[in-house]
Length: 230
Image (cartoon, rainbow, N blue to C red; front, side, top):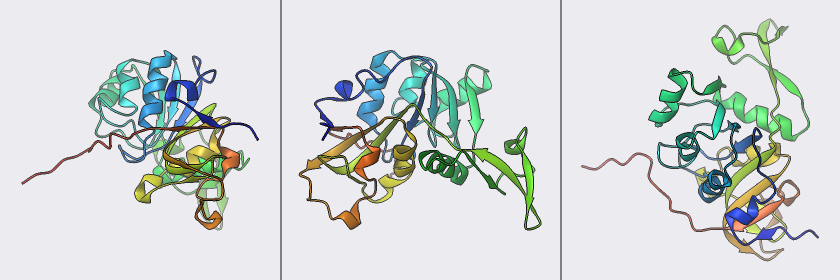
């Protein structure tokens, strides 16, 4: 059995980062993001990255850190809000952006991980999302062809892992992480707890260890994206 547990986020990415790769990143806003792995990716100095993620965090946390350091050249995402630097770079023509509807983005990653090269969907028909894509009629409705996503590297955040990489996510922090874990040629998981093999009920496993190559235990800062007080 290959040893998957590593000592630090930097060690977790050792030998996996280089310029111009595609990186898929789990999370929704700041919920369930692999925050320490993102910092390690920033510190690796890799540039020209294509980042596949629902959004880019906020200006000073999550993928927003990689936008600040100009390491991302292209985003594939469904949401631009909450990150002023993301918006500024896009409107200034400094950042390429492929808008993808949220459900389509999740299915593109799941499909890539399942070995499905593409699928048809009605979502986006008649909008800019459909421009340049194949159209086809099914059951009287127009559909567009969307390509599955295969990332060079996937970064996910889980609540718990066992020693062979079976993952359990916590509540809404699951979000895009299972699909992201599937679509990476190499997947690294940042977790809060590592338990012995057999400690996790097989029926409770959200991502099987076959998808996970490296595991690192970290402490989460759990920042709040929007704070409302009276």
